[in-house]
Length: 302
Ligand code: MLT
Image 1 (cartoon, rainbow, N blue to C red):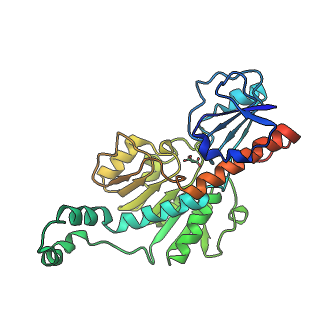
Image 2 (image 1 turned 180 degrees about the vertical axis):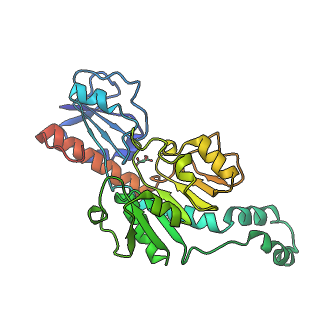
Image 3 (image 1 turned 135 degrees about the vertical axis):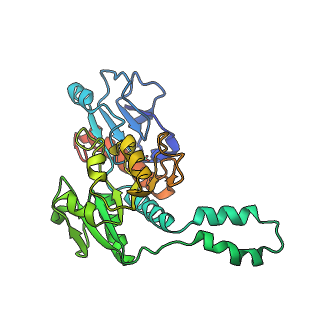
């Protein structure tokens, strides 16, 4: 009998998938496996019995990988399983950066009891005017499962798309459309893009990769979208770039005290993978990876 401990809500882990050879344990001490979403395990002690940790999500920065590898604990993630959910939120962010939906909706709510609202609308709507994305250039940094989906979707919205990935060639990227241009140097993308979206894992190499030297290459008035990890961007350099007008808008899935109070930021509370479909996909993939390993010693997505 394998004992499994869930560090996040078990309803999200499709535990009906587990067969009778498994039982859930509340205790961390006797678990053979952990299932985790975003809870941090950096301060967590690991018991000698622990064989694997399956993370329902793409990023593994909430898991102490070095310590796991020293102790022989296998770590799994679920690449691609939530890519569609994240892609759809990035597209929403892209559109939100061009049209003042938030301001327009708030204005309508505020004036909900005004019987003459139809007349006021005509005067007010000039305050909510926006721009279109068609024909604009989107730079996609990172072409894994999520970045490739965002890039492809943007070409179907008639955007010009340039992709850059420091780790894989454009040919190796996940089923990328031939309409996506390949930048071999990040500078090319930064110089051309009107919108830049980040789709990189957080590692020692990518931490604060978006900093003053890269902001200085970007066009004045660039829109930056960050639905990957907060600390890919140096927050002080970002604040300066916003104040200098290099970054016209910062759309992010990570509340950050240094910039979130600024007018030109739109901040969400890490909702990228928070769809029913993405949560089910990730949970099921994580559970299957764990079972394959515990029962057969097979390692996939480690
Ligand atoms: C991911 O790394 O894929 C996301 O952080 C998943 C999540 O929001 O749980």
